[in-house]
Length: 310
Image 1 (cartoon, rainbow, N blue to C red):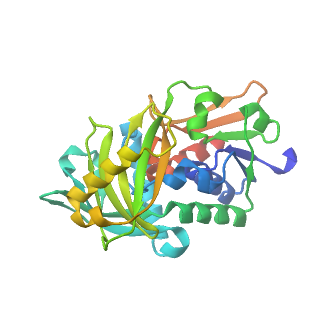
Image 2 (cartoon, rainbow, N blue to C red; image 1 turned 135 degrees about the vertical axis):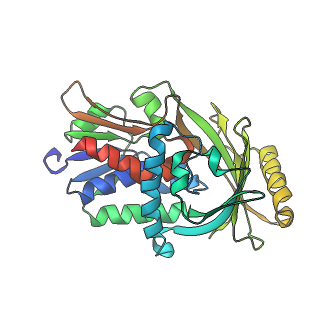
Image 3 (cartoon, rainbow, N blue to C red; image 1 turned 60 degrees about the horizontal axis):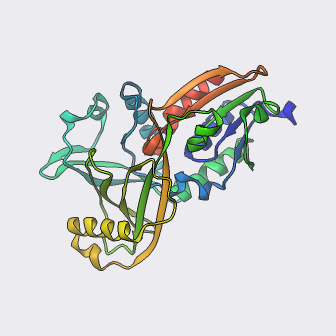
């Protein structure tokens, strides 16, 4: 089997699938090894508004984000198929002058009393992950359910291994700087809200956002570092709804459809895109540590990793 595989990508979330697709489209024979179905990954839980939030290194994130934005703008032409829509909304309390140079290259942006009004990609992640898998299959790649216990296991079947393991990189690399940042969401029946809203306090683990998705209005959220609980907390859910209802009062009476929890794969030193030679001689390319912005930098980081693959 090793003779017909050039690259094994470890991890089947948005970073792994985007990287695998880019490599397959460049002619590599690619397999993705993922412990979970795409629908069960952290990526599937994401609220998924494009925005470089809580991600480092700042010097690289802007370009990765803008490159990914261009791709999403194209994909938004077929939202039912790709899961990507361009939606207007407000980042509460934000000002262009406080953001990096990347923000000056945004289109459809204006400063309003509440903050920054801008039209951005809002992504229905289950649909988008399915689209990535379909595109990968069409390009000759494959996704396999497989729990990886070491990169040498993958290197035995392909000369190049790409590490998109997210939180799993903590044990696989191993990298103790990788840590979970818990995010809890509440999904309610949408009472007619068509625009998104966010209000983030970097000093607090509580954030406020509402994203109108096809399956309901997604309310958030939390950013609890080193909290690995995966069960929804009822009190936290009530607090999320209350915060969002202060922004849009009609949310208070909306019926709750469901609860979601995801563990964002943050890394103390920021995103790692780097190559190293494995003890057995195989090439290992790292692409992990995206925190809560994996969707935002998916394509830019995939290209950077693909350049290391060659």
